[in-house]
Length: 125
Image (cartoon, rainbow, N blue to C red; front, side, top):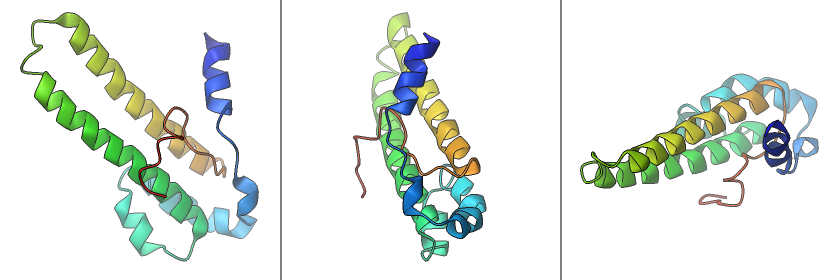
């Protein structure tokens, strides 16, 4: 199981070489915010491409989370008695939380790497 998770995480290409070292160091603080409040760093730090890169990924994750929330609110009243649906919805929510943590980890370690599973779903580019 651990090997499968590592393969999924490593399947996303590393684009760190597109950014210089000073840009990465200057953008780490705002980069963490990209996965908590993605719009704020995007507009406050437009000159730093590293922050811009992570804020676009954070916005994509945020939009996917909004879609999840809408679907959750539509399905939840109907499926209160169906345990398997509740479990699936909880697993999806947990997966979105884990993806956000992976993004924050990438920023803190100075990597420019997309998020697994949603890297191919790019709503914003």
